[in-house]
Length: 64
Image (cartoon, rainbow, N blue to C red):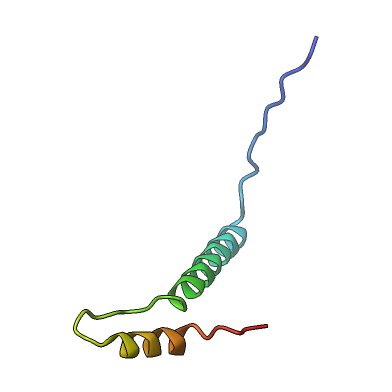
């Protein structure tokens, strides 16, 4: 006969709870920063060369 496993959460102290909140906020900020660094605004009324210049400024490609 197998016994069922029950996980009972241990109550966190206020400091542990705040630390967990801060860690979550930092992780979300890191994800946002990674996403925003690759965002590019492109406008319709510019030439193709201007568009390529904007892309090259934001995302430098290293050729190997």
